Length: 183
Image (cartoon, rainbow, N blue to C red; front, side, top):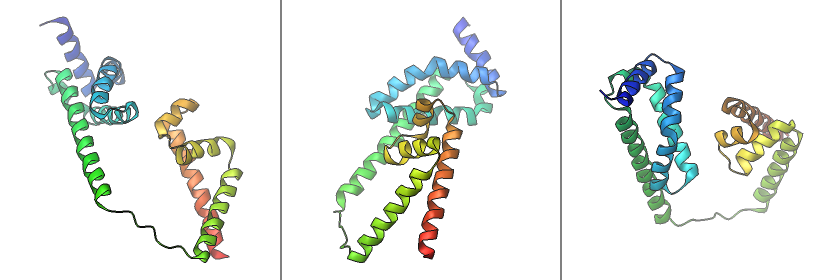
């Protein structure tokens, strides 16, 4: 048995027992290769990163089966390839659906336009009243289109903290909108 195979087998065993250091070893070892591999298929580093996060999440969720693996390398390549294929199939279906239906814009009455403007104003005022960190996270997520993980990395926060701020921001906006409907 060669040393790499033995080391991988030991880490497989540790991963199966829930050892975070073993997971970290596999993440550090395979992340760059898998990201390049996915990027080749999907042609987007951001999408490749999102898909790769899903791959490692599945590895962690199914870690108890790691001790049965003959080759972690083959396992992660197969899982990553399947993730890319699933993504591309769904994207193709979505693109075909969107292109097959023309976009119809409904006519908007003056009252509806006024209501929409009023609603937009309430939302903007609510966002402005938010604490700085919450406002920044909400703006990055909903207006600038960043993913939660990207926001967490840019602001040096945990993904969970970003999610908590977004939940509070959305509750605050819903509450302001519900008060508008009462009036």
